Length: 444
Image: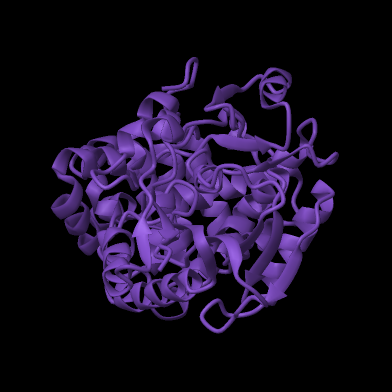
């Protein structure tokens, strides 16, 4: 495993948070309402775009703490409140959740947590709820820690998700994964060149000669090298799939479901001629902006990967398939609130279709990398087994070697795929969860 890597960090990270103003809390309240209505966190965070960087960072920390710890927070509130707010005051529950998050999980003193909750309740238009908010928060300032001891981290995760993980990965790894999911992620970046040099310049840890990891909780765009296009943000595990192709110089690679573009940038930096395909115009626009900043170019195509077809056979295809994203809970805690077990069958059907279609584009001996940032067996091992079974004699698993896997070698499965669980890599501070399979077109 990498040397000098930092252990997982707790979620108490900003001792100055108690002094952060009402604007950031109001923004956090609006963001929580949007997430509760079904919006994704990254989209909802635009509500904080007008804040100063310090306030924006605090708003995000407050929101993500509420989302990560939602089950425990509601359990504590369930004891302290006879019933949740209803009717036109139902959104006041978000204010209360924010108060509990600050009191029990962040570096906000009891007095500041009580006062800021009452002030926010008033600013959010719930004047009649201020008395209740004051009473509940004062009670929790005395009893909250004891009430929290009666909760369990598993309460923050949907039951179906936990049971699925236990069935496939076991009780111990599931518990460790949930504990890690409660902590903020580190900042991982992929430099386009001179990775060791950037690790030194940014005071980070080097992982597999590919990733620089920093314990940084501010705005990454303010770091040295960002505006110059020297690197991009990308989790260490997310940087692995594109690295498994081998030599790509002069090769034509199709990057399916390409936005926001981290893997696209890796492929270009490796010398590939890249066609980047995504069916979302807003996401494709983000990809273009990211490539422009990096000074990179690719053939950008807006299309559904299930209907797209390249003009001729290609050397390689990378599929970062749409999935439940259950491997990214530290980064995207809204997944805990948005995903349902009923989603899996539909996602797996899309994944099988994408994989089978992409395999048909490969030239003889061409390679395909299939990756999902999901911890669900149904979206990883099962999809690859179904498609390779249906395409027997045409598509086969191309086993990843221990040397190629590097620090992720412990995640290698018996057939040479990788099943990366965040909890298996706590010695480097954890990573996003992934399933990765390398496949090859079999010559007739």
